[in-house]
Image (cartoon, one colour):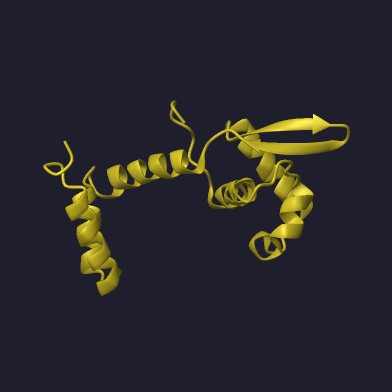
Length: 135
């Protein structure tokens, strides 16, 4: 994402996640109709007009481009999902945990949101990626 992108609203993010999912699953040409047909539960009763409005917002915010072919619009993601997640995570940690990932992890532990299995996985992962082990 290089330059800082605008954060997405919850519904814009939903549509962007569906576009990323289709792309990840090999879709070359993504249309609004494809999104509505493939993800009826996620679209959850939103009209085609609403989906098109959200797509226009995504284009205006620089997250997708639109390739017009005749009367059909195809949507191409310009921002990779991982890039957006990284920036959103950085913003969340900065605004909610005073720029401290440690404070976030402590909050997860205190709230009992992590299972014993997840804690063990994190412990193994942290041991594997310790700075003194990876020059």
